[in-house]
Image (cartoon, rainbow, N blue to C red):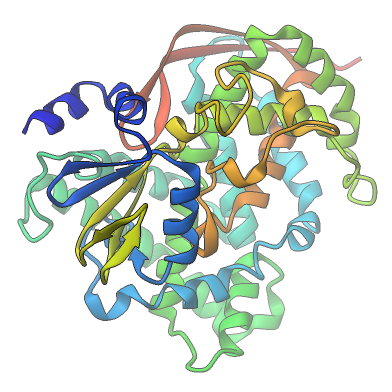
Length: 410
């Protein structure tokens, strides 16, 4: 229990001390191994992706053994839907949502993550479901609000035990699922009438053998909607705070804003400052701060023979602050991602790595870039409070608040 107690008292500090004192690979306990080396993390997440598997679903319940190996189906469904060129076709709508969100802000303080959640959730709902996305953000919010009691909680009872917390999760999931089934059914009946991502998803499924059923499509969609809610909102909260601490970068992002908010035919212009701010914020404060896998069969990792059933943990937060991976890793240096920068993308794990890396990376970067451009061009803002990283379900600031003062047009 010694390691578990120390880990629960200070998760990030514990993992950083493990990296400093015990090297690239160490035992957390008899069944859990910690990787503190980028090369080993790439091996587990990349080369061993078929063996090092994700065992829990979006409800934080064990995935049936027979379904564990079926994740490539979900990737074949989603990857074409989330390609950058496909997202670019809807960029003008993303920009409109970003500007509307900022301009609708009242002159009051918001929790920094909660300020951005309506934008990120509405963007995802609109991207996937168009006009059918109306109630989706609220239903996703309810499901996410129920998850922390069972996710990342080492004291939570097993999923098979019907606790009140577990019932709340299942009820919220069932309500979201029931809401999504009708629009997906409509797209399955007439796929050519819908040009949103859910329509593309259904058309993609119709081309696959065996053809995934609607149940599978709903679950894939829910997973992407959950990932598109608080994770990018936390990333935007960190980026907003970083800008407030480095006002020279506000000026640089503001100079790029006309390109970020431009019509689709010119929106592909490079925005190295805006992208650099986002990437650096995701590097220093990755919302997905811990990646876990479980070996379905034995494997050699870092010279050690790990048995089937072994859990492997690696933390992007720790890897990103290792001087072996990034120069001056504690500093906020967006220029490292721009032309002439020395950041090695292979050492960046903010969106995971390998075949199970985040399929929504481009959607997150484009929507977050639009949000930052809208904020600095449409408003002045102040960020106050406690930025201490809080590593629970995701990595979010402990108590940051943002006040947005919209500028008058003209």
